[in-house]
Length: 67
Image 1 (cartoon, rainbow, N blue to C red):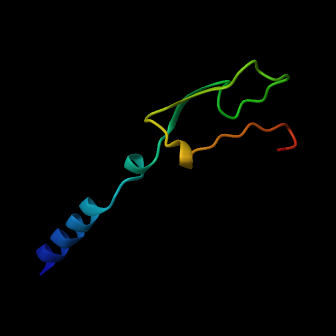
Image 2 (image 1 turned 90 degrees about the horizontal axis):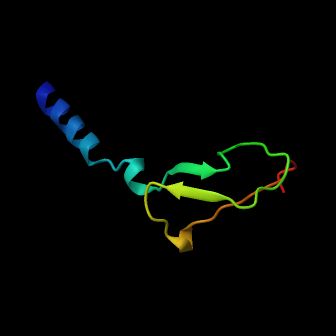
């Protein structure tokens, strides 16, 4: 009985989807992520570990007040 319970638990874990497979992850940005700048950069560049779906993607740049 104990082996069956353990086998069912391991199988259940194996069937769970992982977050890494479901979402793109930011791997690099210019300027650096969460950096504070004294003036606006000429451009912002973002690199992700996979292609983004434009309909479900967005990016925002804010000032020190968060607006």
